[in-house]
Image 1: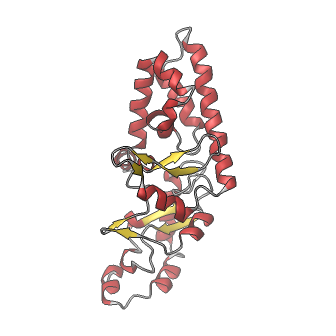
Image 2 (image 1 turned 90 degrees about the vertical axis):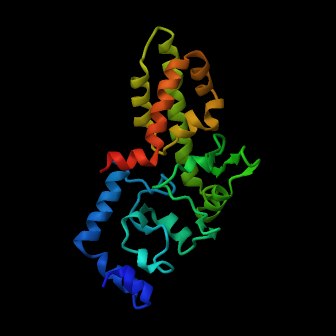
Image 3 (image 1 turned 180 degrees about the horizontal axis):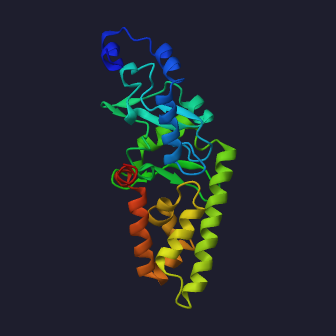
Length: 240
């Protein structure tokens, strides 16, 4: 009988089942696949900062035992995010309040503070208020209270700004092309900040605002590519 069926019947001891399964080659392969999905640094899917060391269940296995072995419910997680999240999984109108980074663009709900490096809730212009899901995710994972994580985001942001500043000087002489600029930015983006820089509040800050105003075609090409990169459906297509 499948775990989902035993979960529905209330006969599944999920802690014991998962502990045993964690030692199998099958679950080990799942972990390796998740790590490969996050690139050479194997970043945590929640904070995109620390090393992802284990499988985390988006819907906690203690509360949703029948989903413990579903691929769509497994994420790569660092020790700190896993400890903060625990079995928390707030719902509102049958919808998870925690952002699922594998199924949606987190930047639709989160913002970045270039002064502190903290992640905060995004202000939603459509409702005239802060994103409720963004605020809840920040609260649960403490994304605005983790100094080491903030320092990492700031370091990445400064690298990205230096690349754009250098490119602006080169663009004055007719180079480089948008693909070259984007390739350099992607190589330097350890924290997934490009969507914020090109499609979020970051576009209002120099040097990104200068690139947009001075070289609109280069900006448009980079923006289109960044949107494809940040699309969860695009990620699924490239890994299947």
